[in-house]
Amino acid sequence: MSDFLERLEQLSPEKRELLNLFLQEENPQIEENYVEPATPFEKALASIWSQVLGIERVGIYDNFFELQGDSIQSIQIIAKANQLGWPLTTNQLFDYPTIAELAKIAETTLLASTNSEEEKSQNMTSFTPLNFPESELSQTEINELFN
Image (cartoon, rainbow, N blue to C red; front, top):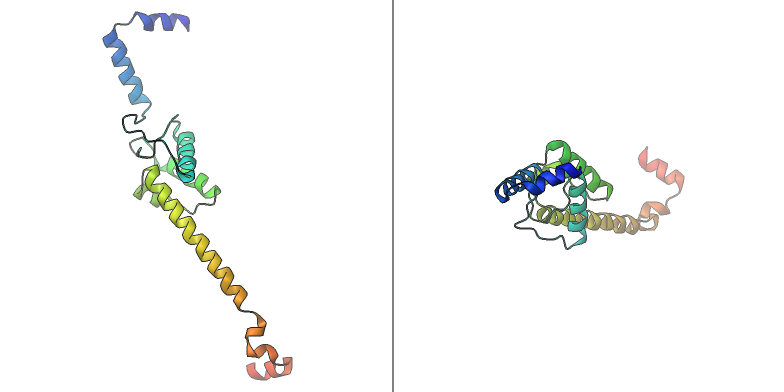
C-alpha cells in the first residue's frame, strides 16, 4: 500500500487532476450544489439514500438518477421509508427524485393519513349503540324487523 502512495506522490499535478476527475466520476456525488438536510424527513431520507446508494453525503437537491440510482435501489429506499411508517411508493420517488421533493411528499402523505385515521377514529367513537333507536328494541322486535 505504501508503494502505491509513493507512486501517487510522484504524479504530475496534471495527472493528479485527471485521477481526481476519474475518481469523482466513479463515485458520483454532486458537491457544487450541496444543501445539507434540515428537517427530520430530509435527514432520514438522506441517511437512507446514503446507505442504499453507497454515497457518504447526499444533499437535498441531489437527483436520485444523477446519483446513478436504479429501480432496485428505489425499491430498497421505499422499503426503508415504509419501515419508518411513511406511505411512499417507487412512483413517487421517480416523480420526485430529490430528497427535498420526496420529503415534502412524505410529510404531506403522512399528515394526510394521520388526519384520516383520526377522523375515522372520531367517527367510530361517535356511533355508539345508544345513538341508534334500534338499540332500545328487544331481540324479538329486532328479529321481526329483519324477517
